[in-house]
Length: 139
Image (spheres, rainbow, N blue to C red):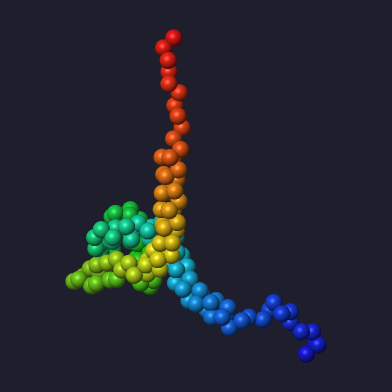
C-alpha cells in the first residue's frame, strides 16, 4: 500500500452500481441493434422483409448487389436475431423478426412523447397568437 487513500468520489454506492449494471444490460442490445442497422443495405433488406418474405436471389435482384454481399448482410441480420431463415426446397426464405428493434422503439417512445407535447404546445401558441395582417385600403 502506498499510504494514499482513494478520494471519496471514487466510492460507488450500491444503488449507483445497480443502476449502472441495469443501464448497461439495457443499452448494450440497443447499441448492437444500431450497429447492425447502420449499414444501408441491411436497412434495405429489412425494408423488403417488412413487406414480404424473400429468398437470397430475390434480394439480390431488388438490391442490385452481389449474392455474396447479400449473404453477408443476411448473416449479420440473422446473427442479430432480426431475420429468421426457413429452408423451402433448395431455397432459403428469409423473414423479418422485429423483436430486436423493440428496444429502439421503446427508447424512442419517450422522444415521441416529448415531440408530440412540444408540437402541441407550438400549435396552441400559434393559434392563440396569430399575427394580425394589416387590412389593405384602397387609395
